[in-house]
Amino acid sequence: MVTISAPHRGTWGARPAGNQTTLDHHSWSGLRRAMYVARGVLGALFAAELVLPEAEPDQVHLLLTEVGHLDPAASAADRRAALVAFQQAAGIPAHGVADGRTVSALVKAARELWELRDLGLAPMP
Image (tube, one colour):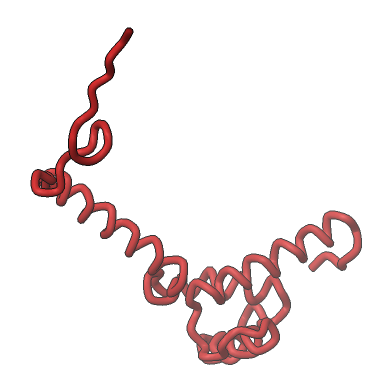
């Protein structure tokens, strides 16, 4: 006959309630680092315009020209008005600033136009 002994309190392998260990310094610093990274990632996902800087004006000018919202010889004031018009057409907040959301929409529109041109469905510039 085999006898199996079990602890008197709790289940096997469990520590008694009064003997619980606390997290050491390394565990807390690792947890703190993980929370810092998670905060940055979530901030970038939900508030990209706060994390990303405004795009280069020359690049915005080229993209607006490519999608047909701006004349190549236009001034900076015209670029802002064209940016507002593009933002309104794209259904994003029209504030005239080339934030992350606006630049993403501009790049998407330009890529779609390039694909249509490659297929012969849109006129070449």
